Length: 421
Image (cartoon, rainbow, N blue to C red):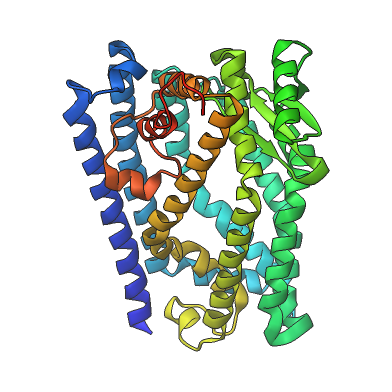
C-alpha cells in the first residue's frame, strides 16, 4: 500500500514540475518578443499597451509559480502528516455507526480548512497584482463578504447534496455510483436554471439592458439568427474587476443573455453585437449539448473510478483511512485526480478551441464579415492586457480559446478584414 501513497506524491510532483517548466517556457517566449513583436501584434496594441501586457503576463506568471508551489507543498504536507485520517476518526465519533451526516460534515470541513492557506495568495493577487495593473475594483469588505457568502453556500447546498450521495450506499447498495451520477448530473442541470435566478444575485446586481440602439441591435441579431432569450441583462462586474465578459445562462425558455457593464463600456454597439453573435454561435452549432454530454461522460467515469477505489482494500488504507469508507475515497479522488487529468488538458482544449473557431465563423456570417469581430477581439486584448505571444506548449495546456492572433487569422482567411463571409 505504500507504493500507492508514494505514487500519488510522485504524480503531484510531476504535475508541479510540468507547470513550472511550461510557465518558464511561456515567460521566455514573452521576453523574446518583448522588444520585437511579431508581425500583426502592432496592429492589435500600441507600444505602451504592449509593454504593459508583457509586464502583466510576466508578473502573473511569477506569482502563479509561487501559488502552485505553495499549494502543492500544502497538499503534500497534509497527506504526509496523516491529519486527514485523524480528523476523519474524530468527526466519525460525532454520529452513530450508521450515521452519514457526520461524513458529509467531514468533507465540507476539509474543503474549508484546505482553502484557508491560499487566502493570503488570493488577497495579494486581488489587491496587489490586479491593483497594480488597474484591474481591481473590489474592496476588502466586498472580498471578505464574497468569501463568507461562499462558505454559507458551501454548507447550504453542499451538505444536503453530500448527505444524499453518501446515503446512496445504504439505500441502493453496490449500484450507488450509478444513482450518484444521476443525482449529481441532475443537480448540475437544475443549477443551469437556478444559478442566474438564485445564486448570482447574491454576488452581483443584474439589471435589464435599457431601451436603445444596443438593445435593438441585439434583439434584431437574435431574430435573424433564430436565438430567443428570456432577457438581456447587464451585470455589475465593474464592482470587482476591470476585466470584461459576455455569456448566456440557462437553456430553453430560461436562456438569459448577460453582458458585463465593463464590456458595454469598452466596445461599440456593432462590436458588442459581434461578441453576442459569437456566443449565439455556440448555441446554434450545438456546442452546449455536446459539452454537457462530454461533462456527463467524464462525471460517469469519475463515479465509476471512485466506486472502484472505495471497494478496493488498498486505496483508503494507503492514506491512513479505514477501508470501504466512501467519504475518504471521494476526498482523495478530489485531491489527487488533478495530477492525472492535467495531462489530458491539451486534448480537452483542442476540442474547446475547435468550438471557438466555429463560433467565430458563425459571428462572421451573422455580421456580414469579420471586421466587427476582429475589432472586438483587438479591443478586448488591449483592455485585458492579453498575452499575444504565448508559448505553444503553454497555450496547448492552458488555453481553452485560440490565441487572439490565431482567431484573427482564421476570421480574415475568408477574404480580408472588411470582406463578406
